[in-house]
Image (cartoon, rainbow, N blue to C red; front, side, top):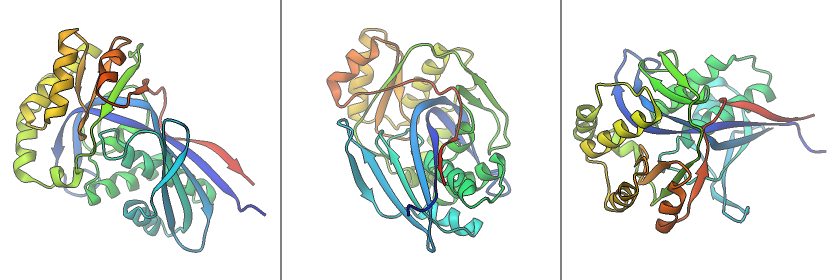
Length: 288
């Protein structure tokens, strides 16, 4: 007999720009900034288990699943924190560590599924708080969990999941992205010198429109010193045809907006198409 299972999905988040905020504890430590919650993300299926187990799978362009890891210290840590053991399989289509907020999405999806499976009765804010604090502890992210609680184009003016978040649902065209591999997020977030450059690059204005978001994100990418040679090549190609574009934070890749963007980015590698997400993490399937 197949054991009971619950499947949850959490959208990813592309951060255009950010600034670390150090609070008085993990809950108030995080970041402010702006980005887009995307309809691509992480699906997590949880089964009952006597010991905590995590398997990470990725889906290739042909729809085939490939196991890429048999462990996830952040997800295991989160399970230990709530005192629940489960066997969790996470799947995603986008590359991991490439600036799509997948570590946050994996935590939120996994905890949401486990919460329903074990009937823990945690509310969404409690789940998000655990996910956020785990991200901060493992330096895998600072503000993605807060963003992924809902959908839209987001502007975060307060750190942590209780910080002020403005959401606008004004992206009517598709987003396209290419990735040239991961940037080791813990290294960047743990480097005082790099974080000082990031802080100095943070824009004083808030994006009132989609065009503003891409303009401010691009200025941030240039000033932060994070732009890699491959990213620079794509940015310049988009500039020649006036396609809104910037660098995925934190990832060695590019995201661009509008139907024309796909034709430009396709020349540089595997093309990922996505759209603005309308909502955040949610249960998608429950089996008896």
